[in-house]
Image (cartoon, rainbow, N blue to C red; front, top):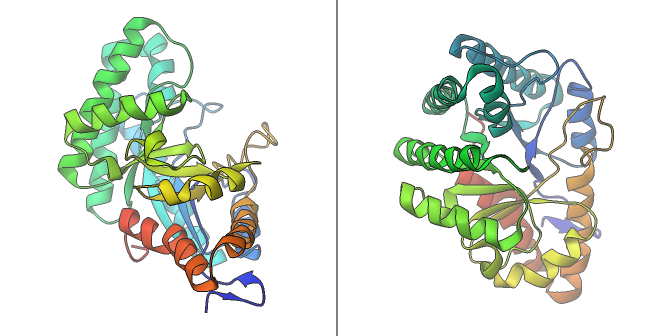
Length: 297
């Protein structure tokens, strides 16, 4: 049984985490494992401090560094690691000012194609994080971002891989807009994962998108109050940055194991043990496996 002795002993999956060999790297992954974590989606992290790539060759070098990091985490920590590769929308917006919008947009789409090629080779499992700027930009840039996102979603749909979305936080309105773009592009809403998502996982809020829930304070309360109204998959994440210059900017690597135990405690107040186990197995095994594959490639 996955619940025994008042503890959850089943899989624990952080579906959006960043690591950096120049920062804590392996030790942060070890913290996650020591707390009970078993699986991670290791998401490619652009290096804003050391310079952004200006050619597809430089993008490829950066992707390969993420793939190498994944291999080291598997080897040294023993975690199941699924790699998520893609060009960050903030990089695209920043490079509009240095490369111009045409060159920045072409590099972005070339980077998407390269990431999807790695997915097709079995070296990555999803495209991300892609999306649109989470901060205010000009109307021209916002329009271009949405046009580009529809193209990116279409590329992911044709390739047959899910995407992790980095977007603004405008509640259900954001999800409604993303759902419409999914429908126009041909991408299944289930394969569009709203990263750093709200713990309101009700159908009314998500509009059928999958959600990688940010497990901050208050998340357990919202999940308990909405999970019975969900009609799409949801998982847990930290968005841990592994950036020593931004301590405390996001949640630490031990958070998802901790919140999983807290969610189990609350579920056991509402459900029989086997029903609570079923919920947690969906969150930490069935749903992420449907999105990212049954086994670590």
